Amino acid sequence: MVVPGEPLFEQRVKIARDRTGRLVGFQDPDAGYKFIQREEAIVRLRLDVESGQILDSFGNPVGVGGLHYPAAGYDVATVRKLSQYRPLDVPVEQFKPGPNQELIERNVFVTAEGKLVTDTFSYGRGVEYREGIAGGRWRWKASEALGLEPHERLSTRDLKRSVLLREFLVKTVT
Image (cartoon, rainbow, N blue to C red; front, side, top):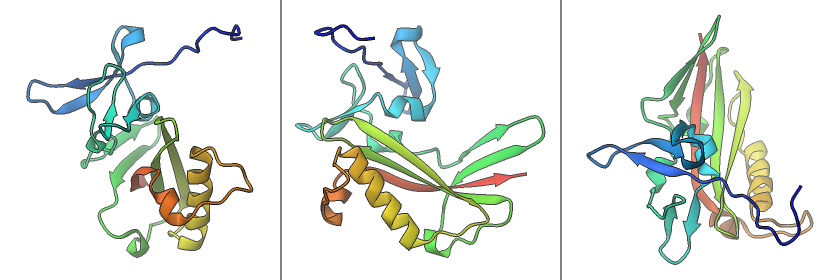
């Protein structure tokens, strides 16, 4: 419950870099600077409209490259399976997923207030990308991120201005 007139608690994030300046991850300063996942960190970042830069809670620039998944991908091991997530290296229209693969679309939108919103959508195992389905869903999520009412419509050009990042990943389960 929030007491009227009391500010909402905003979660903070700090970018972590090595000595060479390379991004190594994101930390939660309110939890003893423990490392947090990229998806959790992105919603805590903000876009400074004046400088045109993505900033952490301490005003450090992050850069759009910090929002991407690593080019080498990452692996998630469970008791019986291994899931490998890799960035898609061919045009999405040309990718034909196998029965053990799924295509995942990941978008990062900027709200009118400069907050970042992520949307991740899986097309399902063995299902190909279909622009008709993807386009309608993308418009809906972009409109939602901008805070538009269901009856309000913007042009695709205006909606594209709210997109900071759009990438496709391939999840392979072995």
